[in-house]
Image (cartoon, rainbow, N blue to C red; front, top):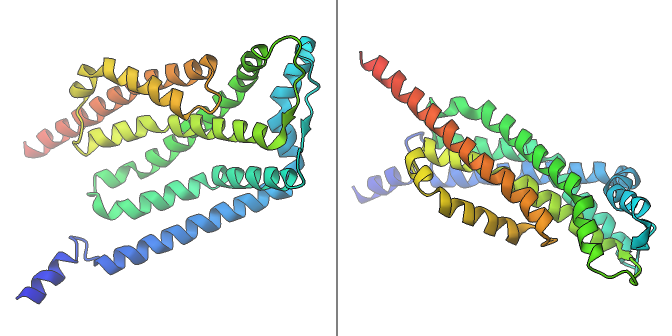
Length: 264
């Protein structure tokens, strides 16, 4: 009896044991790592065009504001700086390129825990994730020039600008990832509403606290720490917070209407 009870506890409602879950997780991780590695290899093959793209906001700023005393060049201050910069761009670039595969693997891992109706959200979840992440990355790239202008202006008029390549690329890549990941937060809010952890009414009641948390998190995750970047991330996330509440409300209401119609 005890043995049978333990075997039943190790097997979920879909017939997957704990060992099978671990094997599934291992397979998903391997596929995700391979996808990132392939993406990184692709970025390495086109490293020079990617580097020109990442440094364009800085070069344009130097051309537009000659009083900043910069020419848009980056400097390697050590023999390992060049290699470190290349590996950093490849790693973050591979992560971004592999995002569709990563999201698909995550979703496929959690699908067995969802019911048949919840599985219908697979395509909308993946598509909206890619769109929101892309919007966040694009906004970060657009904001970069303005953030650099603010930061350089605080250096003083007698200071020549000479950026180290590894530090500049760290700023750019972390900023892009911060915006991209931040823009995925509405999906989490919608998901928590769908599974019943949160309700639209509760989220609306706590909107003041939510805005404070949003701007606090935005201040923490943005690497530059300047007010322009903070506002550029905090304001869209605030708007997306209310959009997520609206989406959750509409989906829950539709689900309720469908259940009532089924009962009738």
